[in-house]
Image 1 (cartoon, protein in one colour):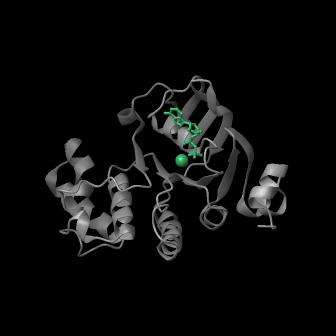
Image 2 (spheres, rainbow, N blue to C red):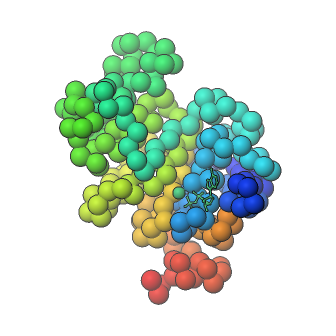
Length: 237
Ligand code: ADP
Ligand code: MG
């Protein structure tokens, strides 16, 4: 009851960005969409989120046909590469925002914000503004904000891509631990093989809008199914 993608396609002008993709993402798992720039990862993620309308195919979210559901109905948490925190709001206000527009009771919001601050290890920084945080801290706030509304699915598009290598490595390990705690079905987009290997239960390798291979990191590493996967992910790298 996680995410099922059936025969999904998306074209921009004459360019086919996503080509009849089929995927099944198990409930509670963390799956990486891995591929070079331009391979259709972000488009696939945006289709799942409802930010793009598919030309063909269907999307199922937790057992429901979500193909024509609005973004709100899908109840998805989204984090992009570039921080999209509200600059004029504190960390707490940023995290609370989604709950407030859903008219959650104030006491409940307060409690949940504290919980989330703990979860992303930012307790004590709740009254700061985004400009007073490091890049890594901001992405953790973005993640807390995405989790605040208890999404069915968490979609992360190169969330650490803009950060330096050391911070990226730390956050990667941290996200894996967080996922082991929270178990929300997560799709993580990256063009970094090492990142995909380290973080995910399963990897979906994409190339030119096609899915080349789906498998556990070790499976893909040991038994690349195509020449592309071999060159992109194989032991030679
Ligand atoms: P990735 O995330 O793997 O780098 P994208 O899904 O962003 O790949 O893009 C795949 C291709 O689709 C790219 O060549 C990009 O130029 C094209 N594309 C993506 N979105 C649009 C759009 N809104 N309009 C036109 N072309 C697009
Ligand atoms: Mg992208």
